[in-house]
Length: 477
Image 1 (cartoon, rainbow, N blue to C red):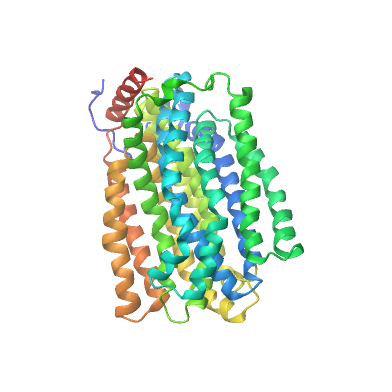
Image 2: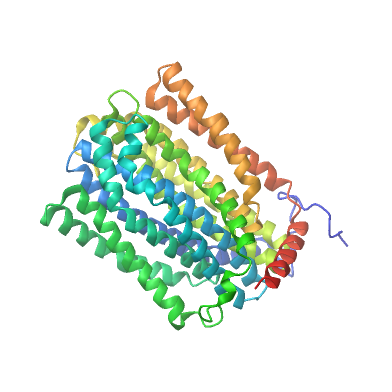
């Protein structure tokens, strides 16, 4: 019998039959469990991201400067703060996922309330970055006219920021108990409302790019309200048993895990958003920002598929570790990584085939269309990397490795990727192309390191850690 502490390498040879089932049957069953979370999560992410693309497209057809201002406000100002809150909410994915696997359902509602308290507090602390965003952008050397318009848009996006603090933990709470249809249905209902609201505010009432920003607030408010009504209105009787004073207990440890999760995720989220920010310093800044923001919009939209895999992998790994089944957690990782990579390989090929048509949705400017065409190869390479890296991050979330991965992200992204990109852009005069190539290099380093960590993982030991974590958090309930 294998020792409990023996290392179970990720690529260890799997037996042809397990429990009387062939490997093909095992892969099929695991794929069904994975897609139960991944499918709705990816669909929801693509719908929600499409709402941003709709607003961005309206802004782009108003003019190049409007597109650049909206891109900076939404991608840099709102996006950076979203990354922080999303990362902090992923602590809930670890705890709720493992609690669900351990069948400690009542703890999940308490975790949700703790996450709301923590994220709302941080959202209030981060609010000045919206209020004074125009001044901050000018201090950082961004063009004055662009900074003023982006800063005004930032003010209009502040309600959206506060809604994130409610909706993101709620999303993880529902996801971990496989109520993904609620998330998907609320997003489907919110999307047509967003399209109509954007048209009415931006064009019918002639509010322009401000109307495009306001419509995001309206559609996200509807989606958040629908999910909240379901979760606390009787849709989750086992996991939601009302508001409780126990939510205020154990906040110190919860904050520690949330901050580690926030650092891990926001360092990833900020990385390519920083690309937009640095591009604004390049020559012909409006054209460079427009072209890059269009490419990253496509990459971000496609990335929602792999964020679905991040969520699915995180839930599957957490569930199996919570159930003290390390080998099943390893098997889930293999299936998820392979499936995600094959999908991104297909989409990367499509980006190369349609390289000269990628910008048409966002603009009618021939200069911007040609600029996007010129960097489409880097878009395809970025999409290819997206097939592996988010899945490995999902393994980290499911296993509770957020603090370790935060250090990996700092080294890969900000010690290697950003300096290399700056050197290529300004030292060797490659401009936007150099910034993006350097940052792709950082992503490759991060992917290699996370792959090594995952390959060397002792899954039996991780299962024991999950059991210990559940006992510790149960005592603080």
